[in-house]
Length: 179
Length: 176
Image (tube, rainbow over the protein chains, first blue to last red):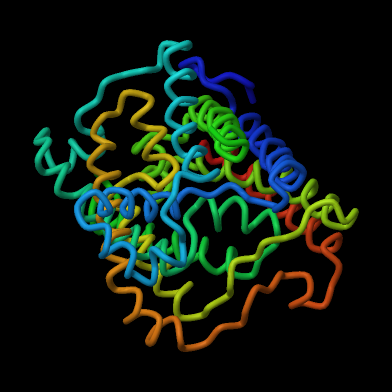
């Protein structure tokens, strides 16, 4: 087993373990400096982004919405964390030569062809369904999968099992096992 | 920017960098796991969980941090989890990795991001309906596995660790 992958990446065991350390440091830091233990997550930020966008068109509508009121539409710690993921990935890929402009993922192209529009339709539809699910379950693979599992939350074990089992089933239907 | 925004940004940059180095941001890796062909994301996630679990339980035992369980709302976690899994398979990204994939140049991730923002807006409109139906069904509250099973987390962690390492050995043997 090597600590480096062929393309200049790091072993997923090493990178994962470092994320574990980052998660611990982050809970400590948020408790110490923000007065509340916050755990890594991403999906609530999409609610806030939707609220910020809708607010530019119809502030009254956002104001009156119970869910936006509950989740508070603002650029908070997690919102900046999600923007940071973009920057961190950009820095990582630009410095090791793995940055690559890609218009359609290869696995998708093999099954559905090179059309960007087909890919856009699939990603938008899939994204909508996934986000409705993530908000209903109150978490995604970051909030449930990483943070919830680290805390031994019962909901995390159930959510992660559902994510994966249904994901395997739908992926087999969509991409075909032998493709 | 305020302290919480700065702290979030720094944490996010490190998180994104490590996700990128672990090569888990890619559509191929996520769909590869769901097609049971490439277990990179599980190697990554389970390594993070195992290390994080030890530290977070230690810090909680010491009274330094507090746990923030998400509610074990039966209908919401089951149905929401299933919807997420279905959408995840087609989209090929999860919320956190979509923005990271964009950072790596995989610009088609903008469609996934747009879909997820639209999904969040849709959820906000449907929230009153879900609240009175699927969310109202059965809520076990914010519960952890140790108190549910009536054992110490220090009984669960070694078992979880042994299971994880066993799984890793199996992945490596099978070349997954």
